View 1 (cartoon, rainbow, N blue to C red):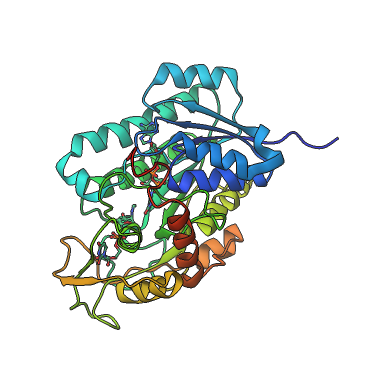
View 2: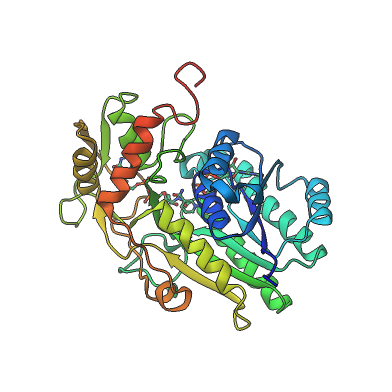
Length: 350
Ligand code: NAD
Ligand code: WQD
């Protein structure tokens, strides 16, 4: 008899990384229940994931829910037995977190504590958490290994550090817990179908969504934040990773949660390669055939010079490695952009 499919709860699964991960989970045969309050996403993403999942679509369920709504979470856990939780739900805009710290602590910290309380009550003690390379601050050297000292330069980063610490404390208090903390580097790109992708609200903060909006005529030019860094061309260097590779990293992490030896472990998800702002612009121009006008300005406060991952631990222990390069990331970003210039909405509804 075939083993019953494992059932995974995905918080924030309508979002950018969540939607790509949910699709990969379905394609790998998992039953997947998504909860999302749709604060920074659209239910259309879930519909598109369901379409892309084909024969696996019946394994997908969606509930509009806030992770801070303990009663709703309890009802969900009472009705469904989850084998594990992947926890994406959270606010992620660095600048906004500086202006609205309480909103970030309330959503990210209280949300996570509520989730962990309900998981504990229902004896579901396996969690994959979306941490971030932001916890490396301004690294003294690269590549960043998981053992590097941790710091946070803003409330958003502090929520990631605090949640990592909460997970470490939970594990120390009860070895039945299993945690995998995934530190993402810079996810970009979209599913190759062009049906799901990143759809930021308002003016994008991050490089790739901004470039995309310049290319489709929604922004006049890209500001290059800093041209005097000690890098190959003076612009900041980051480790960009295709969102589909990142999504696959989560299926690898889920498998790892079944390893009896796992306790609370941290893994970088990056490519191990550094790419400058100007290199990304050139690659995107090539993929799209569009000219991206540039305005060279000063450094953005708080920005590090060079950040890229050591991928050795994830390769060794998760048996996972990113497959795609910058060319494919730009190709798929552009495919998503031309098919959805206004994201999941239209020019009229945006
Ligand atoms: P996203 O905003 O697209 O997805 C987050 C989702 O969580 C959204 O759909 C939002 O509506 C939902 N959400 C937020 N608060 C919620 C709440 N209280 N209850 C229920 N749903 C809630 O962001 P993303 O880029 O997909 O990021 C996913 C996770 O990965 C976040 O935790 C983020 O901090 C982390 N992360 C992202 C990046 C990045 O560059 N995108 C890098 C490192 C880490
Ligand atoms: C990349 C490079 C900028 C915009 C952020 C968060 C981090 C993580 C990923 C969640 C830098 C430059 C950018 C622009 C530019 N998110 N840039 N013009 O800063 O590496 O990381 O997203 O966890 O926590 O801090 O990503 O895409 O904002 O910037 O020149 O309009 O592009 O200076 O060198 P970052 P980014």
